[in-house]
Amino acid sequence: MTKSMDNRKRWWALMVLCLGVLMIVLDTTIVNVALPSIRSDLGFTETSLVWVVNAYMLTFGGFLLLGGRLGDLYGQRRLFLAGLTLFTVASLACGLANSQALLVVARAVQGLGGAVVSAISLSLIMNLFTEPAERAKAMGVYGFVCAGGGSIGVLLGGLLTDALSWHWIFLVNLPIGAAVFALCLMLLPGGRGQASGAKLDVWGAVTVTSSLMLAVYGIVNGNEAGWTSVQTLGLLGVAVVLLAMFLSIESRVQTPLMPLGLFRLRNVATANVVGVLWAAAMFAWFFISALYMQLVLGYSAMQVGLGFLPANLIMAAFSLGLSAKIVMRFGIRAPLAAGLLLAAVGLALFARAPVGGQFVADVLPGMLLLGLGAGMAFNPVLLAAMSDVDPSESGIASGVVNTSFMMGGALGLAVLASLAAARTDGLAMSGAGALAALNGGYQLAFVIGAVFAAVAGVLGAVLLRPGTAIGTGPQGEPAAVTDAAE
Image 1 (cartoon, rainbow, N blue to C red):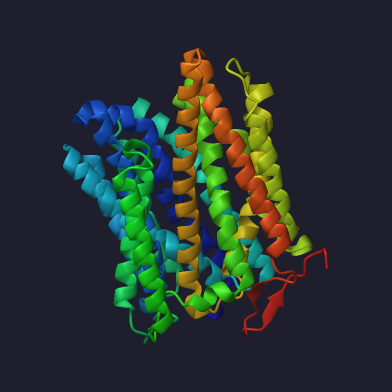
Image 2 (image 1 turned 180 degrees about the horizontal axis):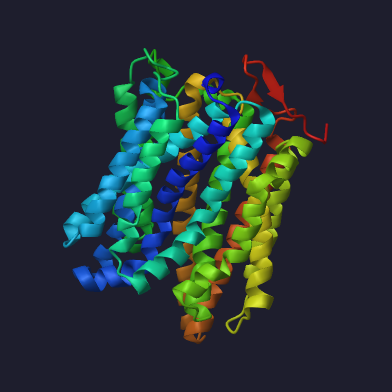
């Protein structure tokens, strides 16, 4: 793929791919700010309103693995453009929606398109940049878009909703999607899939997609239905059974949807476990700190977005070269462990933030450490998850790591929100004030998020294989980066 592209064209292609990914990432958070306006305009109840978010999460999480594999089979550019088109058209339907049903269905279609774009974009980047130094730098840019896009979404969502209307949080995707589509036709090489000729594992696709969708549904509704309710336990139980069926199918079928041999690669397996824990910690940082600033400190949506700006600036600095230099100097193991441990300290600082907190004393220190930790760790996590993977399996490897982040984030947020709510209720029953009880719940969530990040950092330090190959040369020879510890 890279032979037919000059260096400048590859970097332009990266920018376009990241713009497409940013559009997807923004839609996971930009909607949250506009939910009150959507509720009053379309007449949602408190219960039905959650489906504006959950419909997107359900299809996004369910189709990540299948989207990645389809790219391997039928051509990554072709599937990327198909997913982008689906997402953009669904955004138009969301923006024009005048009923609850239309908005929820359009959000589900958005999630499907977003899953395909997210799964394939990482694989495209890995195949475009095969030299270790270039790949590390490219992954740094991709990591910043994924890590920083959420907080940008809060700021943009508040701006568009206040200045125009909630419809524009979706309609803004139209010119972006059209521009990305046109530029991709110019910049991305076409061609058949790396695994073209292989058959699609239909039953594997059905079982794993159904399993993931049921698991996401059970998780995102766990707090409302109750974690020990028949609905939640039943859905998660069926999801586990379907996952077991999927693994059984994959062990026997000639052309599996997900080659189980991927998980015999120690770095790939470790990075996905770390990704689950890291996503849970990241969701604790982003969502719980946003709630703390908004509900406890009384910040507006715009102020919350600005509150994340220091962390975003630090992550931007890493994405523009620092991360690549650190990886080339120290390998992926040390920066990953150090970054996650710094993030754990940042979350621990948030856990002591009081009701009457001040930005400089109680928010900024945690933001700085979390921005530094995310900037250091995100690139190595992605590189480890994609290392040692054959190009014909890069799409499915991308789908797997994206699924790990998605499921880790969804499960982590659901568990943390449930524990925070239980802590808040307990404090309220013991006589604490409303804000003090609310803040006490958030503090517990931050503590557990800090534990997730710390455990992920320790696992990365102990289990990641030194001398990690982060790319292959033009002729396919290994291009290894040796960890400094060796």
